[in-house]
Length: 341
Image 1 (cartoon, one colour):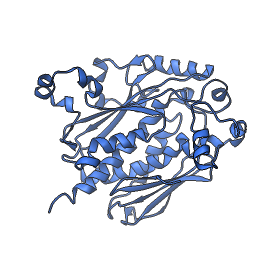
Image 2 (cartoon, helix red, strand yellow; image 1 turned 45 degrees about the horizontal axis):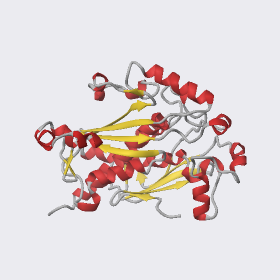
Image 3 (cartoon, helix red, strand yellow; image 1 turned 180 degrees about the horizontal axis):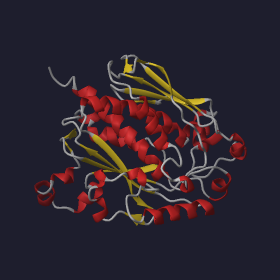
């Protein structure tokens, strides 16, 4: 199996299975001398864990410590410029919950697709197709964030749920999102209706059902002119980053598909926000707004009741999407250093 790498300059290799001994990441391309903030690494892993921000009733019951072990590439709290390897050990896998699906793949999952493609696969917890693989992405994203904190300290990446099932943020609720503590909302839905969303998801979990939704990523003060012509536009690499996350099924930049309804005179002579912070494939330095949609969780009915699953992926995916954003920004920031003499 190939294609476990991501990035062109800041390159990560993700490894491990859901019920294997460990999951980890190797990061190659991070410059020497970056201050390694282990507290930030642990904080981002904690944000990804189920129940980390009061969401215990609406997420998977699997409880992993996710304590990171830095194996290489860091000395005296600074990066060495050599490959950085980080792992977390799996401690709360219940493989017996999955014995029935070894020969009877779950509907809507990757079980049979991967087995048919590769001829042999790990059915326990979904193996490598499990959402637990995103632990590796979050660890790598934390290191990318460390790099950007030094090179572009004003850059911020803010993720939140803008829609879960029938609930959507109103225009008024979108005001001053950057000043809100998104993690203080149980479903990461920054609205006074967050508790209603949490109740909806709790009810779905108890009945063996699930919901989809939309997550948004706001990048404030990004470096300008990130991106490469043609095949590595910033928007195309962000789209690849997001759509590589499990259960995603749509991506939008700025106005997205709504731009199809707008006349060119209004679109190009109006607010720069219509472009979403990217023109010609390059960042303008203005805020970048991205949206990604998620299908309802595939674990439903008896499968959901027997195992430990999330009734909605969006809430758990926010830190993962943020991590992928930091990875793309770090990759293109390094790439930009070779744009001209």
